[in-house]
Image 1 (tube, rainbow, N blue to C red):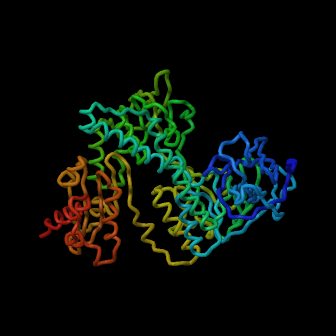
Image 2: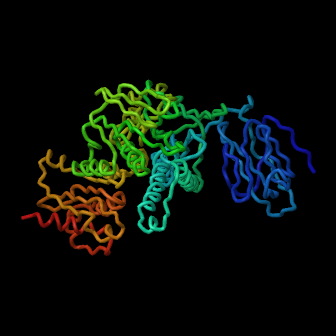
Image 3: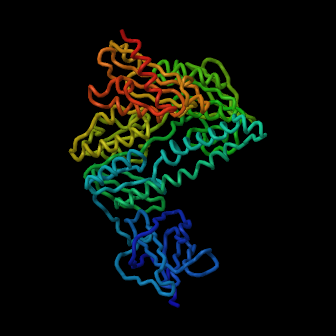
Length: 580
């Protein structure tokens, strides 16, 4: 047996065979193939091929330290000094040694001899959330070379790891439990499911892993390198990526797209380190279901969590800093949301502002400037977001963010530096994952001087996952009235639909706003079960050029029965019959 190569600062090696699994800082088993974290130093032995990283050995030979071992070929390659890719492949001949041919130099992160390597791309994207993914995929499909920088070890951004995906998966888990608890057959059988918040949260975690794998496949299939580390601008075309271990790499982009997302806003006088005070990121780590909760902030996040915690049986105080809930919605939908939340038992307080937050042994006390005091087990701060621009080095290139960390852009998503774009939550509203993705696509089309369908970034449906759901597209009655547009309204109440009666989810409605003279669809507003799905039927017609975007499509189309989709026919006929 060959003696192990002594650990050194750099090793020369390469491997024949296709690339398999890319693991960085996450040792784990994939299909029986063992891979290992690669840190400061490496040792390679042709047989039995141990990989040594930070003193730990991941051995692919038949030794009892690791279950299911097997001979394997080993590939190590470096992407600058920022990260290692480690690949293990099953050996075709279980008795043969791997054949390693000198080809590339592998530097340890701490090696003073390691050069600051640099790469150049047509498009460099910072952030792998929806905005970054949209920009990257559009660019690579357009034939451009693309590199992407991601601060965290796993791709997907806040959307995948701390925002949209985990919260919506949690919501569905809660929905399943509450539906089972309300089911008459289950109750008669004495079945009463009881799960803690932590149990429900963990049941949703598998979705995150699936999403990461799907997105990773997109980048691998399109040969997009991912540079893991904190990005910082050096000059308008150069970004330095600093890995958490201290290694650095510089990457250049002819064009750069900033898609770093946002995080919960944290005022300095609120102690978020206290175990009873949470924001929308840390609430996902809650283990036990509280008896009561105060939610400060009644925006989309606040309303969604108010629904979830109330469905779990918690007493909920929802504190709104404005006069109405979600003021950007149609007034009728706002009223319906407020009614349903109160009907479920949520206590809503409008036009309130916090004065101080203090903790006591058995809870949190929120003191409002009106003099009210609210004491509950925990407090969820859901009042605003902050753009992730700290540490980006914007000052090095003459850019700046506002007081909430947002970057200003024009209608083409260009910053004040024309070749640098910003998309997604880092530019502020609408702060939707769906919007971020199309903004990323639009920015890439624009920088490539390709046709840019402006409609895709203007008409973006809103999806709000309260109980029931809310989704809307186009104008509200308030807006049409202010613009003096002659419009009419068509309603379909879900309680009149056979499908809703069958499922027992009869709360809600579909509302169509259309021009009295041309019958053109001007707005679609839905409140109820599956509203975020139902909206897209109307969207497909509303986005058509005239005269194909009118009420008549729904009147003259046959819908399956019983379905929720037939709400469009009911609403269309309801509105058409108002005309004279």
